[in-house]
Length: 309
Image 1 (cartoon, rainbow, N blue to C red):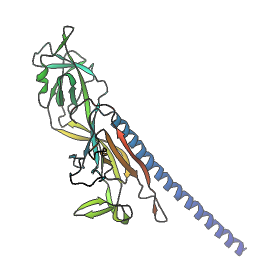
Image 2 (image 1 turned 135 degrees about the vertical axis):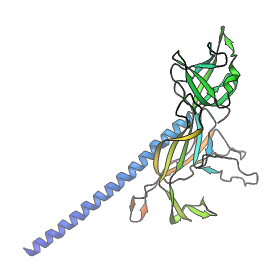
Image 3 (image 1 turned 90 degrees about the vertical axis):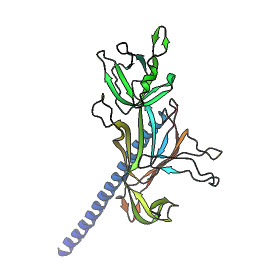
Image 4 (image 1 turned 90 degrees about the horizontal axis):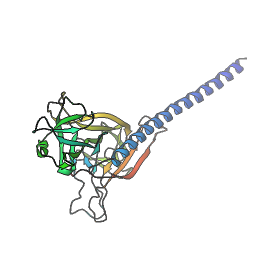
């Protein structure tokens, strides 16, 4: 009886260990799948927004500064173009296009027939017929619904007081756009003799996989829009980048964006090259880290409405 009880206990322990191992692996796989699915959804949103861009996309660093994609004149043929943590562009706000009139009640004002879809400070006003592209500083309403009085950061609304006429009516087609940006941030570099990065003069420089001393993990892809610090739309404020949402986590690519080169070695600004991967640092099994390369492609923007980003 003692032997039978001992064997039964041993079998129970083995069964428990197998069950525990299965539950642990299931939880790890679920975590990996969730991390990769979130990253895929973020990449899909990024792709849709870049396709819909009406301005030339610009590379940005983590301080929101523009990164020049142009290689040095002394660069060797086939050199790798500069990479960046972010990319910015403009998308048309839902409800555009509208049309602008001279305000019949005030000759020094313009009004935009926007049917109640009033813009907010920080958006951009685009009027192709007049070559006007400027940030919206403030917006005031009127007694008549469905139109707005818009004031730009450089007072360019004064250039269209005497608008062109068509059929006896003065107007010009206008658009509101959002200046948007995707940016990878909040990640950290972890010591790893088989990593992808080396620390050179205080900067993490990407090297061939397996030859570095660090790897990057836990990066987040943030979605930003340009907005104004003013809490009142009719009062001008200071423009800033507003963090709207985190669209992907567990990224292992700190600088996934670049501008590909054309056949002459210069930047091909019609495309943004994206090399983005996701990795859950907690999902290890026997010392291995699960990695999923999600995107390695060039995304084109389909139309250009603006002159400036």
